[in-house]
Amino acid sequence: MRQYAISPAAQEDIESILAWTHENFGEHARLRYKSVIFQALNDLAENPTRAGTQVRSEVDHQARTYHLRHSRRHLNPLPRNHASSPS
Picture 1 (cartoon, helix red, strand yellow):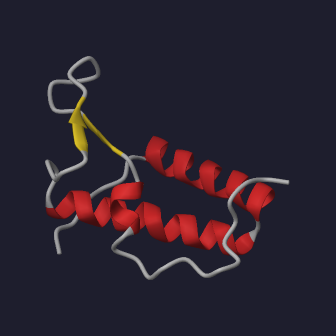
Picture 2 (cartoon, one colour; picture 1 turned 90 degrees about the vertical axis):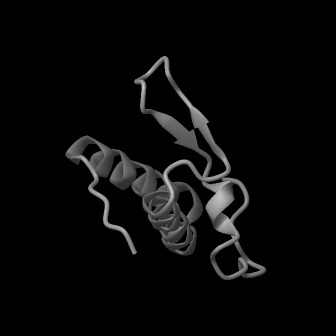
């Protein structure tokens, strides 16, 4: 498996997203979302131009975006009681 580095700013963003997820959806959802985020990072480290990425030349000549839904299928199925929206 290839290695990747996460910038301090990106790490702070991930931590903030996971804290918000915990506050709004609970611990189970936070853990699940964390798994999806890190699966996506692993998938992108393996193949940065994989299907599902889109070139973002307005950001940088090498920048791409990738939606987490493309990596969700690499995880075990969600349990029946997964969070779908905040109350």
